[in-house]
Every structure is written in C-alpha cells, then in structure tokens.
Amino acid sequence: MFIALNQAHERVWLQTHEQAATLSQERFFCPACEQPVRVRNGKQNPAHFAHIAGTCSASEPESHQHLTGKQWLYDFYTYLGWSVELEVYLPTIKQRADLIIQKSGHKLVIEFQCSPISVPQLKARTDGYTQLGLPVIWILGSRYFAPRYQAKQQKFLTQELTLWFLDMTRQRLDRWQWQPSGWLITQYGHHYRQYLRPSAHSPKQAQLQLARQLYYRQPQLRALQEASYRKGINLAGVPWVVQLQLTGLPGLVVPEWQLRTWWLLRFQHSPVTREANHTFWQRALGNSKTPLLAWPSEPPVMKRWLTVLTRLHLLEEDEQGWHWLQTPQWYPDSERKLQQFDDFLAMQRVLEQRVSPAQPNI
Image (cartoon, rainbow, N blue to C red; front, side, top):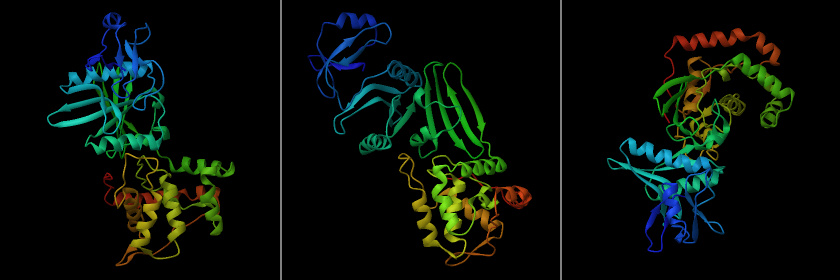
C-alpha cells in the first residue's frame, strides 16, 4: 500500500524512492488495522508500505502489477478531471478502496482486481460499497485476460453488461461493452481506439460440438441428456429452433440453447401458463455466478425465445399464457438432424422477413 499513518496520525503517501529513503527510519501504521507497517524501497516495485507481521482484513499482499496499476489509474482519472483519493479506508464496512474518484457530484469506487476472488467475496465487497451509496467499477488484471469472453470473467459482469481490463504491459485500459453483434471494445491509453469484436455463432458447428460432447459424456450435459432420455427423445436431435436468433447474452450460468431445451422438455406437451413460465425462468437464471448482474422479471432470453416460437406460428399467446399450434420437431439423432439443416434455414428466412430483433434491455 502507498498510504500509511505516521505517529501524528497523519496520512503519508509514498510517491518516490527518494522520499521512501528519507522516511525509512520513521514509524508508520496501517490505516485499517493500526498495526505497524514498514517502508519497502526495493528496485523491482514502487516504494510502498507493508505489514511487519500478521494479516489485515482490509488489505492483502500486493503484486507489482497491483501497485503500479493503482498508480496508473490515479494518474489516468486525474488527467480526465476527476478528484482522486488513493487507498481510502472505510471503517463502517472495514474495507479499503483502491481509489475513490469524484466529479460533478458523482462518486465512484475503483477496484483493481489482480488476485483470485470468489463470488461470495466479490458480492460482499460490492454490497459493502453499495451500503454506503458508492457504485464500484471492478477493473481486472492480467489473470483475467483472454482474447474472447470466458467464464472466468463472468462474475464481474455489470448490469450494463460491461467488463474493464487494465493491461500494464501496454499501459492501456480496455472497456468491453456487450452488443447483440459482439463486444464493443474501447481502449484508453497512449491512443484511443474503438472497434467491434463480432460474435460468431454457427448452428452446424454447435450441433457437431453437441454430438462430440454427448459422445464423450461431458458432465455439464448429463442432467439434460438424462431428462431427454426419460421423455423418450435423443438430446442429439434437439429441434433446430433452439439455435435460432439466440440473444448471445453473456452472464448466463447455463448456455442459452440449453435453457431453451429445458423449457421445451418442461412445456412441449402442455399449455404454458404465465405463472409456470415465470417460475421456470426465475429458477433457470439464478444469478449465483453473476453477483453484479440482476436479471429483470422478464429476462431478454425469455422474451426472445417466446418471440421466435410465436413468429414461427409454433406458439400462440392467449389469456392464460400460450398454447401450442405445433410442437417443434425433434430428430432421431445428430446425423439426421444435420441432413435436415434446410429446416433451420427455412425458419431463419421466415424470421428475417419479419422485424429483426431489437437489442435486449437488461
């Protein structure tokens, strides 16, 4: 950490190696636990304070990346005209924010997350800041980098479906914003750049992957495979309609096509009441892995799915909910399903002739 208290209980900010050298013999204390800390003034890391012994609930050992990243973020937000406070200890919630920034009446916490953090820990820290009326932006370090969206990033998804990354090697802050067509990536650093990283969805490739997963008995499909078997159907022959106009929304605990398949297994031989439909999606979209994201009462994946079914005249809305006009076709196996790929193309043409789906609102 860069901030400690001196014997007069004043905040001291270590900013240079020269300053650290002059202070190395003085006594300093942690603002959170009030235990003694020492000046660290090595060649590899910026000058900083470290606990002499024991641990502190509001602090943890810091890597070179975390120390330099906090400095970079301080300079970045200061350059943008924000009033920036570094390492602010909040005694009410016993948490230390990496930065608190303020401008035009807006006050935010910035957390630079380089180390592993569990979903419960992430939720607890976020809830602590929320308790004080402080929104928080989680900026991710190199541990969470990937060329495309991955499950390890999922827990940090915000209500706006954004992710933030700080690449200290390139001295660059990246903002990923989900769009129906892919991820809109904005890069801030020496140069400003914005571009779209398109999402790629190939129904045929998805079907071939499903066949491979079933062949190798992938654990994540076992429950769905067994549920299909109990209904006397083969999961490999799941109707093509489940692959049509997927929202592509990130943050789903279960892949969208699987949610649709579970829904079909639940409702394909009965009317769909509004209450039963609501209960299904409420349970299916449990946000245990996305603590920063709360799905609305009518989630976009549900609305898109019902829209696809009604536009294809498979389902029709009534006063109680929906009733079937025609149930989707299951295929005996993957091979025969792929032979009927024209079914998918025909349904796709029908949907494309109608109003194209709007961007889901979260």
